[in-house]
View 1 (tube, rainbow, N blue to C red):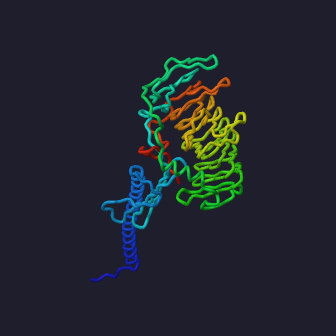
View 2 (cartoon, rainbow, N blue to C red; view 1 turned 90 degrees about the vertical axis):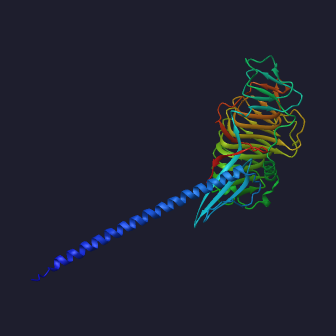
View 3 (cartoon, rainbow, N blue to C red; view 1 turned 180 degrees about the horizontal axis):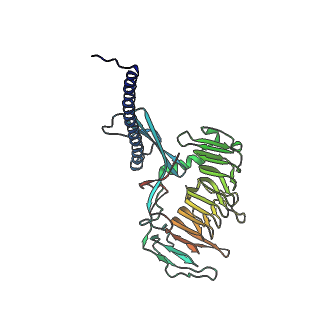
Amino acid sequence: MLKKLRSGALQFTVFIGLLIALLLGALVLYAYTFYYMKEQAKGTVAMIHLSNFGIDYVIAAPIVSSDTLQVPLQEEANKSIQVQLAPWGVFEKVHSKAHFRNKHFVKTAIIGGKFSTETTPVLYLQETQNGLSLVGTTAIKGAAFLPSQGVKTGYIAGNSFYGVTLIDGATEKSETSLPPLSKNVLASLDELVKTNPSEQQEMGAVNSVKSSVHSFEAATKYWTSKNSIVLENLSITGNVIIKSTQQILVKASAHLKDVIIIAPTVIIEEGTKGVFQVVASKQITVHKNCELSYPSSLVLYQEALDTSQRNMPNSTINQIFIDSGSLIRGVVLYYNKKEVSNFDTAIKIESGATVKGQVYCNGNIDLQGTVSGTVLTKQFVANQAGSIYVNHIYNGKINNEELPITYGGLLFEKQPKTIMKWLY
């Protein structure tokens, strides 16, 4: 006998079927979403690896062009890498853009010469047929390259050498010239110094800027002036070059990060902090208690000496001067294209001042402070008691105890490279 089903039972059956269909649909959607997210994550990881490969390719390959290059890949369908190497002050910047299907990923970094504190000498003194003399509390700890006359104790104004060991490390004979810097770096510095503001790609009034962040993925921003520039009460970060044909004064109220400052004369006010590069052609003065973080640089690059203020008392013309209490993490470089033979001070590091990194000078260094890293110089001078003592170090200290085992710094010819800092 046939029985009639109530309409409620039929509705319940339809509801159960619909619920099962929704659950199955949700499971299918979840599985698809999981698969999609997994593939997206794999694609992102693949792009990161590709961009890293591009950076590694530039570091390892002898690339000198600033053009965009395609990195060769083997059997990598739907994948490509474009890299660009360009100078950035005394360092270089590398830009790596990875493409995977319809997506891309970009990484940018500052790169410099790769050094090991375990094998790099702390001192390289050029052979000038004049030995090194140590006076006062001078201390040199690490391997050193010296002229054939070697090292001895000295005597200045009633002070002799008060240490126990002259060189606390192995010594070898130096050559008649300093290790050559990268030709690309020198060409970059030459262009930065000589290029006039009217020839720059972009123009702008830096005095109107109070806060600016400019990505290294975009084109370099230029703020230039044919007059003196005072940087104060502002914050500038990133891919920016500030240039004056006269002078730039950096006040303690200015917050500068990763920018380049270019002028014949650059003065950094007492108490200034930041991370930036300075390129000058006449003089650089760093007043007391400044702190420039890694990777900063002070570069005095000269075509010829400026003789306009040479006889003025306490003049710092043709000189990088770092006053007491200041700390520079990075590179201090003096380079004169004509390598003038004189006894004028090209770099002066006062007592209580510290450079953690590299000091390179094809002139004369008056070292009374501390260099934790490496000093490469033509000669030392000590201006004491109204006299100039050639190849004397008076109370100066050189070691590499406060640097990491692997350090990135100046680029030399045929020198391996390393990443100094990731950019944005």
